[in-house]
Length: 74
Image (cartoon, rainbow, N blue to C red; front, side):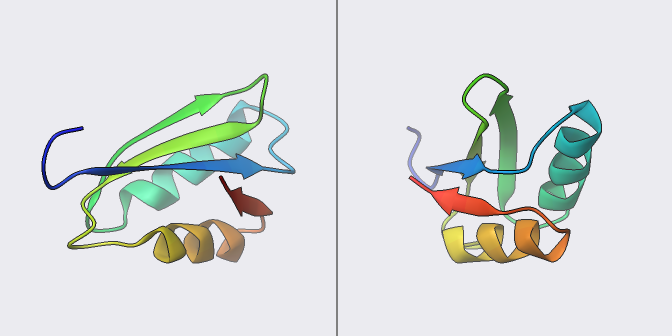
C-alpha cells in the first residue's frame, strides 16, 4: 500500500445486481478521499481504497447505509 492510502474490506449483505454495485460505487466516489472501489460478487465484498486523512471507514459505512445497504467491516 502506498503511503497515504488505506484499504477497507466490507461485506454488503443485500447487494443483488450490477445496479446495486453501480449505486454503491457512484455514492462512494462522491466522498472526498475515496480513491478506488472494487467488488467481488461471489463473496459480496467490496474493497475501498481511500486516503485516511480525508475519509474514514466509518464514513464509508455510513454512506453505504444511507442508500439502503447493509454493510459489515472486515
